[in-house]
Amino acid sequence: MQAPAKEQNRSRFYYADDDLIEKPFNWAQIARLGRYLKPYRKQLIPVLFAVLLATAARLLIPFILGWAIDNAMDGGRPDWLFYCAGAILALFVLQWWANRYRIRYMNTIGQNVIYDLRAELFKHIQQLSFRFFDKRPAGSILVRITNDVNAMQELFTNGVINLIIDMVQLVGIVALLLVLNFKLGLAVMITVPIMFVASTTLRKRIRQGWQAVRINQSRINSHLAESIQGIRVTQAFTQERENMEFFDGMNKRNLRSWNKASALNQSLGPVIELTSAFGTCILFWYGSHLIQSGELTVGMLFAFANYIGNFWEPINRLGQLYSQLLIAMASSERIFEFFDETPTVSEKPDAKELPPVRGDIRFENLVFEYEKGRPALRGIHLDVKAGQSIALVGHTGSGKSTIINLLCRFYDPVQGRVTVDGYDLRDVTLQSLRSQIGIVLQDTFIFSGTIRDNIRYGRLDASDEEVEAAAKAVHAHDFIMALPNGYDTEVEERGSLLSMGQRQLLSFARALLADPRILILDEATASIDTETEVRIQEALKTLLLGRTSFIIAHRLSTIRNADRIVVLDHGRLMEAGTHDELMLRDNGIYHGLIEAQYRFLQDAG
Image (cartoon, rainbow, N blue to C red; front, side):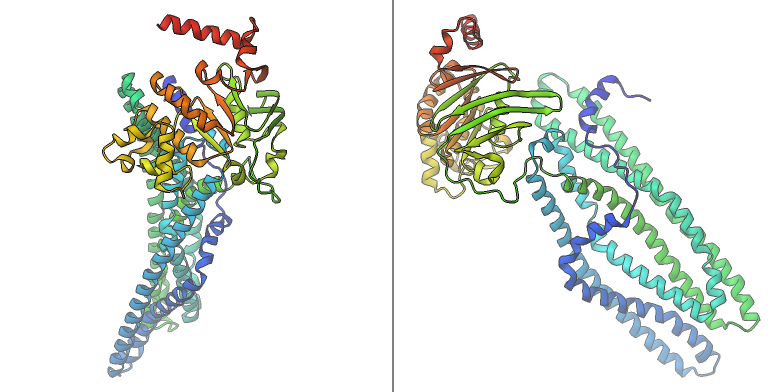
């Protein structure tokens, strides 16, 4: 049944990044995960020794029991039973101790591996370029760092070591069966190919089933993140019912995919049990025949029966482990898809540190496009002298923010280049460039923590006195002191307890504290009331003094005092000059924008 058009359209956002990753199952992928165990090689050696001890003890017990039946009981030496019982007890104790040691230390190693994997993934994502985040919802990224990494926890804590245990046990059992009675050993091994064929048929469907589960969980997380962030808009437009219905549909798809994957996963167990029952029938039918012909003793048949029981136990666990590997495979594919992402903006191997800059900036014939074939900038050429303030003006989509993005090197131009003090930005390290640029955005991001911590984010080693001085300079000190705990007031994520104007004042203080040589104000005064703006204009004089600055704004009061106003239209530089010079052009774009602003203010008044 096809989903409604409204749901289909809305789903495109969530599904764009979550198509099934169709790659064949291969051990190379698991080996790639295995490299995270390399730092713990020394700790693994005693664990593997404990595994060998426990397995050897377990394999000896059935042989001793069979020998006791044939020799101590039928041989008329009941005193040997005590020695056999003592040996078996000692082997059980040895097996218990070895397993206890293995579980304790393997859990520690597994948790360390998960820690390393999650830390490396987060570090890698931090280094990716804006293009990566442009095409992925935050929830999809979040689920890979949390759920997909957690899905491999069982693999590293128990799965890897259980694989070794079961493989050693299987090899040991097969060797003993063939040594004890070659004919009977071969007969019971007939069932192994049957089990292999059946499991091979199921494995692809199981892997795809768990992939679908991970994808649906990612979509749910994406929707939850968006719903929480946009709850005000949802309630303002009374879309709660539609939002709940949409979430319910996603939740049902997740439930169906989980049930399907779980059913497929559980289907391996009955296959192994049926194969085991068939092997047991062969054992007793052919074994009784060998006893009658004198080729096998009752004690060795008893040992065989024990070994066969122990044989199918690891086979069953390997089937479960295989399902675990499939789950880990689905998650690892999604994790390594992120690891395989390379930054579109990266440093050259021989990138140089950008020295403290004066602030001479040059944009040389810039061409840039977010999507191929749709230029956002078309041949922009602009020279900015150190200490100048440049106002970027134009309609929405004209390319103002794109110029700023290229200056900060969030993206690289398709053609042309950007230089600071003569240094091509592609030739210097990102840290040395961005540490000398301060940005104040319209949508100011406030982190969870105190007011003081949020201001200090501009320079982490700043003293309390420097933090307060920066706040006073931008007229934020008064409202901060009016808060319950002043600078130590805790603010929630995104600063929901503060007004938009207050958040912007904090961003001004943060930028001033960082003391950048190049300052960018992107609609930074858009949400400040007129009274506060008067004080901000005074603060801006201090903030902009001696710095090269770029100001994106629509308010005349913010841009008219700029040294130069640059007018953009559809990615092209159309006009440049002072406010007075541009106002003399009656048919100019800037003149039209200012006239439209005046008319709007008069109508609003």
